[in-house]
Image 1 (tube, rainbow, N blue to C red):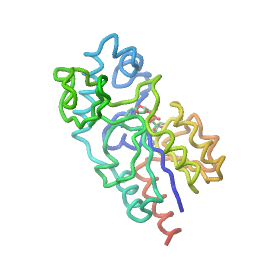
Image 2: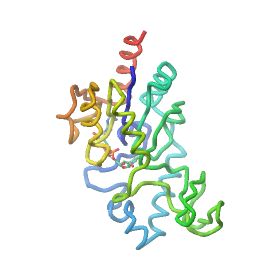
Image 3: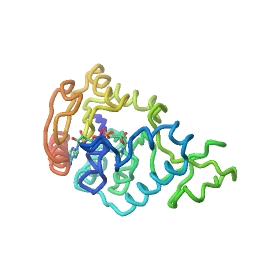
Length: 231
Ligand code: NAD
């Protein structure tokens, strides 16, 4: 059985990483247009670097929760038949032991050089020290996909969606495309689709089945079902 899991900020919420849109419509107190667009970076690079430096420091202190751990356990059983496509820029899937993870919106623990295109590991603040180790120019930016930019690995994701038997979306609001449309692609190729979320998402109606609750409860229970099914 081939499975594609799409995760969003909701899977990391119980680890202590705030989700994207709080009730006030802000991301950690900032308007999205001020910190998560190429225009914001052009206008005020220091504020944007500081914002992601804070996020990097915050996620360095958090640990995976039972939802991440259950997905890693599922990979140990299914191997190459499971891929986790995440919109998250934290590394909690990897910390839990998952290895087949596609970070379609980039990640906080690498930096991207605007001059030479190199992606290099980073565990320090970029605001004050942005020299690229590959080309030496001071043009490192956060390796995250901002609004208006093309997500990573879409060709690979399309192939995985076309080949899967199950598509499961966990803790994602269905507000950010193209990820919000993956359910339609998978269903169009015949996959059975399931959404796990605290509440209704913007695309709940598109799924064959929807379950509401905490990811830390719903994901381990669903993984147990799959493990029983595949034997
Ligand atoms: P979102 O914040 O728009 O939506 C979060 C979803 O998770 C909501 O539908 C909410 O109901 C659900 N949720 C919250 N707590 C939950 C829980 N305990 N169990 C189950 N579901 C829960 O997130 P999104 O759809 O991923 O879009 C946000 C964008 O912002 C992403 O593209 C990402 O790049 C970025 N982001 C990343 C992180 C991270 O890396 N952890 C955090 C915030 C934002």
